Image 1 (spheres, rainbow, N blue to C red):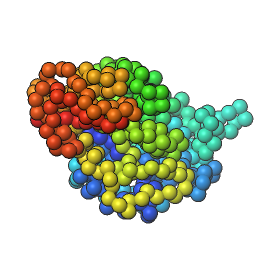
Image 2: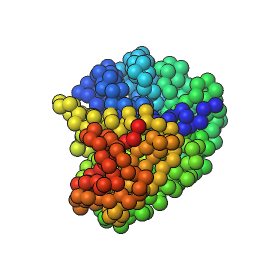
Image 3: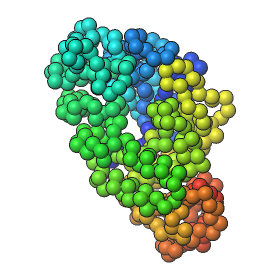
Length: 421
């Protein structure tokens, strides 16, 4: 059986917020974006939950994607099951895979199981359904009930069989018992080898990585945010943390790097609010460090607004996405360059070491050199003393030839990606 690395390879994940993606906010409206996303180099499309949203306890006008009322139906505001099946087939025909957001820990307040299978839910001392995480539009499921486990797996199988999806992004995966995810994989993987992405940090929940192919890197995001606000003294700490993730993974799973997603954008701010001018350099790192990059709807525009979570708030695609080529070059590089055929990475010494984050990836003589200025200082003649860097390299973004051993010019928060074929 192929390893996680072989199956995911140089891929990338792009999260689709269907409601906010177009004015129509539906499946048919989104389909016109598929060729553009394929051209940008996206490998995997992750759709936020496609299921209907509960009316009871609904927040805002449209409610939360994550308050499901029926696991085996499509939200009528998005379209039909057949619409989604055709969308999956169209994406796959363009070389992309599709994974579906799966919310296993809880349902909305009026999910059909509350009447059909009330024993599937936890109850408080008063005998009422409840949520244990402070979310007042959902209620917790009870995984001590074997019937729930069987029905949940059957609902996941429904989407695989009815629409042909390639896997699942598992919402707040650590809130659902590990042995359920193990049971689900044993039941579903023999039918079709799926992709399993977990919303959890593997350093905080290492036991769950027995199951999942990739997982979020929340500790990394926090450290990067601190670096932006406290300065370059954290550069060594950032390296140490990235190496910790890499050593922990040991090719068994892929750390997923990101600067935004639906939660971060809506509740904590866009990548430009959090990282300011450092945002693009972090995007370069997310795409080129060992692991897998996660992008969010509209980052290629670039979107600089917080999207409403419970109400309509459409992305503005009026102009051609200004960062399309930026992401295209990064994503296609990681997909096709031999240096990404392994997970090896090497830190490279540089002048102004406290300010610069520099590393290379290599496979035999094929190499990628990444130089990031994690500071507000211009670096007009950055020295890289490693004699192995001498020679001609091609700049990924400008196509100019550079000799990094002769010095590199980087503006504040700037970056350079140099390629040897």
